[in-house]
Amino acid sequence: MPKEKGSISPKEAVDVEEAVVPANDEEQSEESNPKPTLTHQPSFFTDNRGNLKVVNLVVRRPCTIFTFIIVLCIVLSFLLQIIVFRAAENGNPFTVPENEFDVSDERSIQYDSLRLAQEEVEEARKLKERAGQVTPKQSELADIMYWVFEAQPSNEAGVFGSRESIEAMKDGFDIFLEDSGFRDFCLFDYQQQLGPNATSDDRECRAPLSPLTMYYASSWDSEKVAAVIDNLKVPGNIEKFNTLALCYVQQLYCDRLEGNIDPSDAAFAMALGANITSITSTWDMKGNLVENINQVTELASYLIQIDVFKGFVDFGFDTEFTAENPVSKFSRGIIFWGGPMEDSKQGSEEEMEKLEDSEDDIRKDYIKENYLEKMDEQSKKSTHSTIRSYYFMTAIIGDVILNIVTKDATLAIFSFVFVFLWIRLNTRSWFLAFVGLFEIFFSIPVAWFIFTVIFQIKYFATLNSLAIFVVAAIGADDIFIFMDAYKQSQYHLDILCDLETRMSWVYRRTGVAMAITSATTCAAFLCTLITPLTSIQSFGIFAAVVIFIDYVLVMTLFCTAVVIYHNRYENNARFGCCCPCGTVTPSNTEK
Image (tube, rainbow, N blue to C red; front, side, top):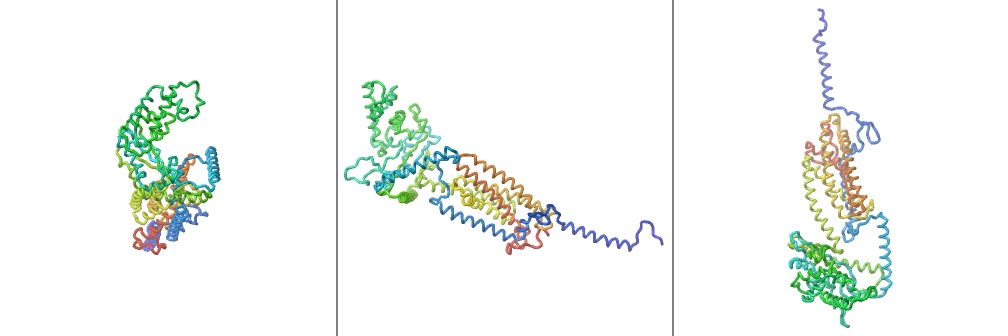
């Protein structure tokens, strides 16, 4: 029976159906296991499939590379501890801030050359003059303790406006003056007249440089002070006294006086000078607080206008303090520390430096054990209701700065805890959160090692400690970028043929983006090189190095951690066990 045109027999239909079925299976197989597409040409950095060779190595040896990077970070941190911290002066790795100069400026070079030459000449002259001589005990200035006082905003009367404020300032000096052990460290007053059989131990400590010596004078003649103030209030008397005082009070430059001096003017100058000298001779801070503190303040407001006596008062009052405005919002004072601690025969320069270093250590230890806690208490805002106190001392400045940095570092713990929890929330993995925190934290010591040991930059400012907050933010941001690209990669079927292809795609997508942002941030910090301030330059360079190291660790350590996470933790592979640390076949990507 002839077939109709366009029809097929049952046997042919079966053959066609059998032929179609394999074709459908092949298409389904291609959809579930896509063949890799060549997105990049083979090169020195890529293999025949266009994948990055370095990523292929990470995928094939994740735990080896992971362990190597962690060990390297720990070793560099250990070397930093040995090379920098242990070799630091007094255990303080930070550079003690001093005068800031532009080291490349011609004026700075000239100043440094002059200063170094002067120091060398003075030291050589001192050694020559004192060769074989004995330096009396505590006759030379070894250090100073500097107090600064500020009136609280609510204290409109200023730091000398009430007995409470004055007594509060005196508390800062009493920390030392009321301690019997301070006598072993103070600067002796060698201008004090002693008997013929007196020794150095009979001398008294030099009085502090402070306006409080006026308010706590050993004696106070109110009538004499009132007479002096009345004399100085007369218009023209201050100018007249300033003209005559050098000659008739201090017997200096009398030949420079022009014209004939009226005998009455000369008598006026001598009498007023004698009265002021008598008054100031009892300013020793050994008495009780003067009853009429307003009279003391008024006297100071006039003495500050007299050339030969202003040195007694102008150091402790601010620039706004005048007779018309007898209110000082600030004051300051200095306590003097002496050396050597025993009569010392002049030796070589090396011997004297060794002696000074030894005494500095003894002095610092004594201050830390006996005074530092009280000084901190005095400087607390809540200690006094009318004033704020601040202190400075060269011997302990390194320890104080280190203590401040340590306290600030403890505050950084809260930042790190927040960053850690946010990374955990973003990555949904405790493992990646710990690795992320590790690479952020270790960016600091690794960068410090490069900054100090490799770059040989010796100036490490305390400002550099702020880089920890910078890297905490930027490091977390880099991790989020990397993880977002990794999560997005699962929706690109053309790269899910194997983990090497997938991670190469992630590496390229995030590496360029993070490199651009890190480079611009580094460039912004390196712009601080244009400033003449050394501490700012140091911070800018260090912050740039920290950001660069953070970028390197994200692209190496964290990338390797993501591969381990993919193999061992994602989808609970191997029940979350990370040992042994080889690759998983087939990987989660291939599945």
